[in-house]
Image (cartoon, rainbow, N blue to C red; front, side, top):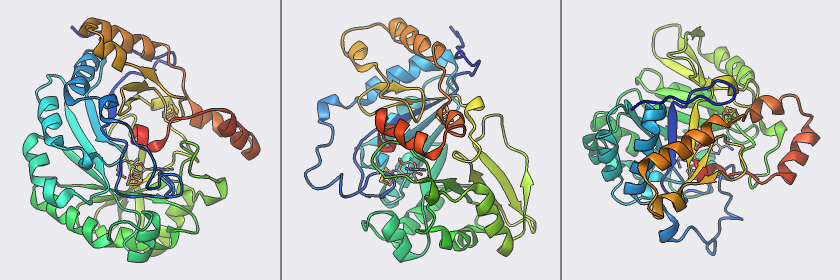
Length: 345
Ligand code: SAM
Ligand code: SF4
Ligand code: SF4
């Protein structure tokens, strides 16, 4: 039975993002800075992490409420053992139309075929630069650029097309390599998406002057490669699309900071330990794991999620545009927030 829900601002629930692990083999300073996530950092114990069957139960409960898209993320989702089993389980859920995965690409070489065979529809690979040194700075000096490029090749061979390549642009760190990244993938069929550096979480020391706005990115790109705007694919698409005027492909710009898109935000997020989070800037989310593990019925789970979504009023990024920078910093200091690796972007 379908009982579609909308929140208090009339936004439907359409996407579910699931973070399947809080661990990662990178230490991108803008997400999991190495000074904080060092050798002695205690990641979540195994028994706190949702099992695949529990994730699938949540998914089955959200599809009647309107969810059509699942995005698997993390942490680094390919560190989760046998991830293809989750994808295969999700594939069997009637009404779920699309299963996507966001990964740093380092483990794709050995997993791409099984992901494809399990029914993964789409792939996003995060890659912040094709300059090996800049890439190394952006991932906290972990694995090599080569390894990610090989991963992308393996994904192509496994049959993934139009792979999205996500690049977070941090002014003064990797912005000077943006054009090279675009050129690298031009003509490949893959779509590079440049993302404004966001103030998610409380651990990355975010500063507004490290944000290169999408407008500034476009100006830089257009100096070297002629681009023209194109229509979005669907309502709620977060990337502004541009195509190369010679027909050699397209890019996207994600304006999360300069022009937020809260009005169309139809995403819920499920943390590794089973909290439902209704905004990237939410405090901590609502625990679903207790209900899942205490014999709660599927109907009770569905009703709980419907109640959470119906009460939702989040529109932090829009509110932020009305705050001064000092108000934003004060707000961040006074309010605990979920971290990016907990909700997966
Ligand atoms: N580890 C995987 C990866 O990097 O693709 C999946 C999880 S990661 C948290 C998901 C996405 O969030 C990545 O594309 C990453 O670049 C992006 N991200 C992380 N921190 C960010 C920030 N502060 N601002 C903008 N994007 C960010
Ligand atoms: Fe890991 Fe992705 Fe965060 Fe980088 S952005 S530290 S790869 S979870
Ligand atoms: Fe959605 Fe919250 Fe981001 Fe606005 S700030 S787009 S409501 S996640």
